[in-house]
Amino acid sequence: MTDKTISFDEIRNDYFDFIDSCGKFNFFTRSKRIQSEKVVECGHYLQVIKSYKKQVIDKGVEALANELFHMQCMVNASRSSLLMWIALKEEKFNDAWSDLVDAQEYISIALKIKDYEGVRNLEKRLQGAEEAIFPGWSLYNSPGFVETIGNCSICGELFSLCDHVENKIYMGQLCQRIDRKIVRADHFAFVRNPRDRRCIITKISGDDGQEIDYFTWEKTGETKDNSDGMYAEAILFKIPTLDVS
View (tube, rainbow, N blue to C red):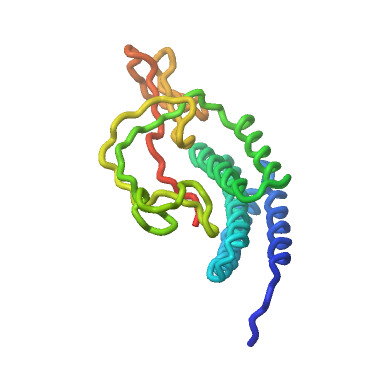
């Protein structure tokens, strides 16, 4: 039995073919069944990309590791975009919004490595979906926590003691602070530019005190006291789950 050798140009061309195949289903009107199948394909393809990345990391070739990480982020962006359309069809609007933000954040990470027309096209398509499909939030929820500094995701050391820079890419991984512990919740506020755009307002009260779902604008049947101002319900905190290692 012999090991098959594949060139990086072949890997790159296969990646472009796969991304193009995802783009064909990145529309609301595409079959939910086929979109779900494509999500599964993305999961399998991510494992292939990561296996290539591990090989070049083992050889210490950072440029190739970073390019494969770019591919990993773009496949994840495509996968999240497909999940957004599926969630919209299932009327899981909170999930759809989170999937959209995931896709946009994957693109922002991918752009740290490479910038070309295909990336920008998906970025524009997602921005168009945000503006056309979702209601738009003038305010988001922003929680304030006192937390420990945590450890570095690259070297594992206490983050204040290592030389790595948060949100910079090293050898195919995004540097983050991990193992952080919340000491206490300090406050929360409504802001226009939140750290996490997943923390959205989900319900408000109308002038008559009737609670309204902010996505569907349907009344929930609950009545709120507006004597101190409009009632609002929001997502307080989301645990990041992006695949960045």
